[in-house]
Every structure is written in C-alpha cells, then in structure tokens.
Image (cartoon, rainbow, N blue to C red):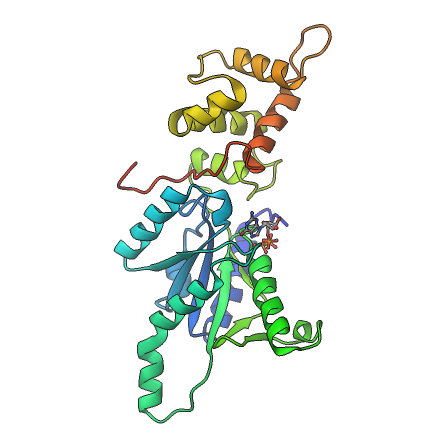
Length: 284
Ligand SMILES: Nc1nc2c(ncn2[C@@H]2O[C@H](COP(=O)(O)OP(=O)(O)OP(=O)(O)O)[C@@H](O)[C@H]2O)c(=O)[nH]1
C-alpha cells in the first residue's frame, strides 16, 4: 500500500506513533537496506523522542552487502545500534533480538535491582510504506506459533505478539511518511517501489537509475545493457535497450514506455544484482 501524504495524514500518523510510544521499551525503526537514509522518516528523532531505538535494515538480500556493512558502521558511529535482516526469509531475527536486549540491558538491570518481576521487552515497528513492516511482524508471529504451538489466527485478535524470545511486539506497525525533500530522494524511493509509480515521471526515474548504475555499478550495466558509459543522448540508450529486449516497433520506433518499464523492473527484480542507492555521508 502506498499512501499519498498530506499534512493531515502526517499529523495523524505522527499522533498514532506518539500514542503508542509509552507502551513500548524500544522502537524498531525499519528502513530499506538499499536506502538506509532515504527510507527514514525525516522527523523520526523528534517523533520517538529519546525512546531507545534499533535501526533495522530490512531487505538485506537486495542490498549491496559491502554498503550494508558500511551503513551499520555509520549508524553505530552516530550512537545508533543497527542490524540488517531479511524478513522475507527470516534471516537475522536472532541478531535483531540480541541487539535489542543489549540496548535495554541497563534498563532491565535497574528494574531487577528495584525488585520488579522480570518481563519481556516490548517493541513497536515503525517505518515508511513498503519497507516490510508487515512481513517482519508476520515472520515473528509465525516463528512464535511454530514454537509455542498456538493456533494460527489467535494472535490476530491480540494487540501483542508474544515471542518465545523475550520479546513482545505490538501487532500493528507505525506508518510514517518518507522524505520528499529533494528530487534524488524521490527517484530512489520510486526506483525501489517505496512510492507510487504515478507520483514521479517514470522515464526520469529510469534515467536516474541508469546514471546511478553507470556511476557505481558500471560493469553490471555493461553486462546487461551493453553500455559501460552512457552517451549524453538518452534516446540512443533507450533505443539500444529496446532493441535488445524487443521494445522496438516494426517501423523502428522505440517504445519509450516499455523500455522505461524494463529498466525499472530489472532494478526492482535484482537483475543488476544487489544494489544500494544511498552512499554513507563520509563516502559521498
Ligand atoms: N526481498 C525482500 N523482500 C521483502 C523483505 N521484506 C519485505 N519484502 C517485500 O516487500 C514488500 C512490502 O512488504 P510489506 O511487509 O507489505 O511492507 P509494509 O512496510 O508493511 O508496507 P505498508 O503496508 O505499505 O506500510 C512485499 O512485497 C514483501 O514481500 C525482505 O527482507 N526481502
């Protein structure tokens, strides 16, 4: 689901997250590992207001592994714990729980010292649309059902998903809006499917993607489309891709829409391998 964000929506989204903050010990801030910066909500620090937080770089299977490492290091340098996961396959969930335990250890030690009964940590997932919030919640819920033998469907009626692993998760995520500050962020969000295809001109999105590939992943661009460097004339590029992929009419006309579609689909389906579109500030 992609939402068109208006000031009223943003205020409501913010209020919904703020209301639930007091119920949890920690925020799981879910971002797309391909866009660890552009898929963050621009007001997240203000919204979560000092609440402990773990940044979770989801869809690690689609992101450049070297860049994911660099991003995790970058977040740590900023004093923010971060881990990468693949919610679809369920990889990295143990690491995620461990990291959350580490962040909350002092708080729970203090509670124990005051004689309070030990309890599971309580968490809420927040993130922009399409980062994989539901997938992660379902993964955690499913694991729990498998482990405890609960009947499927039972968890649906509950507000909390209790896991065997010392974690209780609010069953509805907080949905926040992405950044809309500069065109480049918009292109990245569109290219990875985080915003509706109708928001930006898709041909511009595809061209931005090609230029990014040329800059950062030129050998993959060459392998797939035959260009190591892109000429200034983008019509020529579209023509060549169209020829390779059968998007030229019998009269020799390029079907620009079809080629646009091919490029975007190739990026989204991993045909260029694992790609990351945000560069850490120190490397930029
Ligand atoms: N490859 C890959 N795909 C994932 C992963 N996690 C989620 N997805 C896919 O990403 C898409 C969006 O996932 P959702 O769980 O619906 O995302 P959401 O954040 O709940 O989205 P909204 O309901 O729009 O807020 C789906 O097609 C998922 O299958 C992952 O770790 N790897």
